[in-house]
Length: 423
Image 1 (cartoon, rainbow, N blue to C red):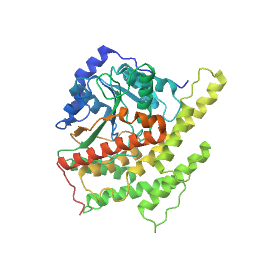
Image 2 (cartoon, one colour):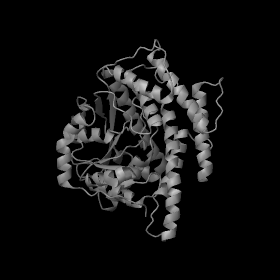
Image 3 (cartoon, rainbow, N blue to C red):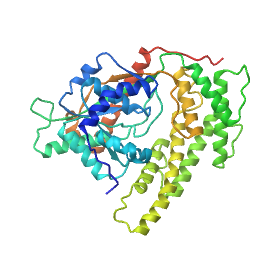
Image 4 (cartoon, rainbow, N blue to C red):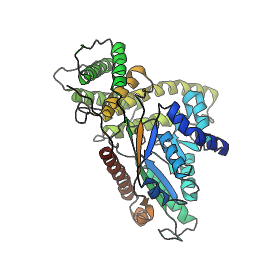
């Protein structure tokens, strides 16, 4: 059994957090507001009392709070499933809060039976809706969705099996049972000018890296000089000789491949030859998770000592994988193809994470645009699932991806754009 953290819901704590959440968003999250699109709550209300999994995109560390604000507006409280490591933040205090708010853990990619059983139980009972971020990673990309993991669709179909085993008739009818997957899209925006805050952050980063920008340097050129210096430093750390003739994107590609191949060798993992970088990250992260969260209860004292020593080394490899994810999402040209202040912020936030080794700063008051897509009724695909499990799971996963992507594109067209001149 893995080191599972079950939900330990406290109604009093849930009531209190629900009460103070708007104040928390204003004071602690730099006046962050949630703008729910017209018709979204009406679409969501169709699932009232239904068995449902909510699948939002996962671009920001404050996504759970944003979903919490949506739940508040919808008059519901959701269960959440979160990666096991977040329960250890703040020396375990974060985990206490999470569990008592109805959040439980999963060790990604592992046979986390207790977590799987809890997911199936919540979905099959249908007392509360369950939030699961299908990207499986904090993408930090605000305009697009990373390729989704298949776990969301697979878990939902398993819950369908449990309903059927318990005697329920599967179907969309009034006397029948089904599980819905509800895609949700969230886009973070800065509705007011935050260029002064971005410039201040640039200056701090330049000082940290020992750079002195010319007085007439454009915002873009300053940011690119920082990226070049940061990339050169990381290449030296990994012993990679930078080729002046290579583009920044070629160098980023070589860096990602070097990290993945080197870590696969250390962990004794054979990566699929044609696997995408993100797939490789997931394979390697799962290997780390398997060891780090291995149950120590059956170990001798000496075995625990050896395990803890190795665990400390393994935890340091998360930073390497996070770097790869950062450079999957960001590339040379990311800003110039759409020069909004949000894209500038995306890049600068990644530099803050890398250089300061912590959470990036919030550059100003934010407005998160949130939309609700069309719910996916799994009863329509259940017969196919019984015949071709893998293909049907992939099909439903693609439907979730397409619905979130479509909503993000729509949200980009309805918001106000503020551009930063690169000239």
